[in-house]
Amino acid sequence: MIVIPVCHCFDNRYVLPAAVSFYSMLKNANQKHHYALYVLHTDITMQNQKELQNIVAGFANASLEFIQMNGRFKELFNSTKSKNHYSKEMFYKFCPPSLFPQYDKILISDVDVVWDGDISTLFFEDISNEYLAGSKGMVKKGCWVEHYLEDNYKDFSTQDRKKLLVGAGLLLYNLAKMRADNLEQKFIEAANTYAQQVKQPEQDILNLVCWPHIKIFPANALVCNYAYEYYPDEASALQDLYYKKEEILFALQSPIQLHYAGPQKPWQNIDCVKSERWFYYLMQTPFAQKFLTSLQEKISSRTKAILTVNLFHRKFILNKLKEKK
Image (cartoon, rainbow, N blue to C red; front, side, top):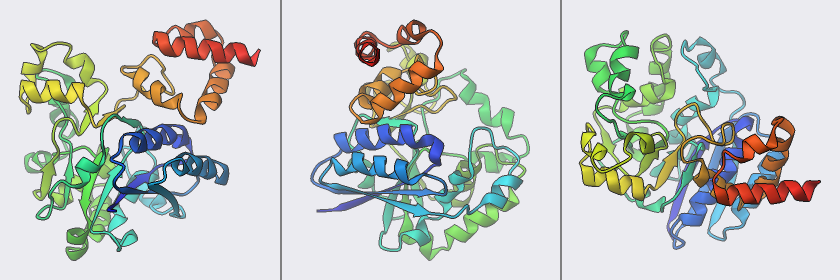
């Protein structure tokens, strides 16, 4: 049985989405392989660790290990100008080469995602001559993404802007090559050098250091939820900057990973684009009841919240709320 390691870096605030991510990943993964899940963290409580362990324990071909990072990169995070909604845990993505000497390759994934396809297909991508593989993402002509680099990276040279090829939400690392070329130390040095310039801190650094040894995943490897608004029909699928119409349509129909990449997250804004897929998996986890309880406590008008969810989940939540009366 082949072991497929998957690393995650998040804090205690992201335990709920992590539960959905882990469950959907293992539910759709090829059962012939073993999935060794790792979480690099500083503050995840023992209770939350136990609850996530229980989810993974439901799959005979999976394991979960938490690795305590003891607040590493706190100073780097404090000195980084652009923080947005990020946390210091993003910089833990620099550490897998030394943390996992037993592996030559490892997948790195964010947890604000659901998996609708088989993660193992990405692990077997050939990156023998590359440092990493990642998703370029769909970019429709004229949308804000097309102009993002030009508008937000004025402090970067034209050459450096060209190096920003892939997102950091889903990556495949060639750990053996990274170790051979001492990339972990180069990541940290570059992060300190560019601390006042980077906009998406760990993502920018990974691209700058690994370029040009970066492979692009197929379009369906990672699909951002907002893509479903940009490509509502076949005609719009002709307007992507990088992919052919057939690639766009296939990716939208058969995403391996659906990434809630923008500020709208389904556990915070339950009517965001493609939230129904996140709820579909949430309702199959032990965290569903906890979410329903918090929903009832936080939202003054339960009806308003319920009406933003699709019909299936609306009925499910209504029934659950009735049970609690």
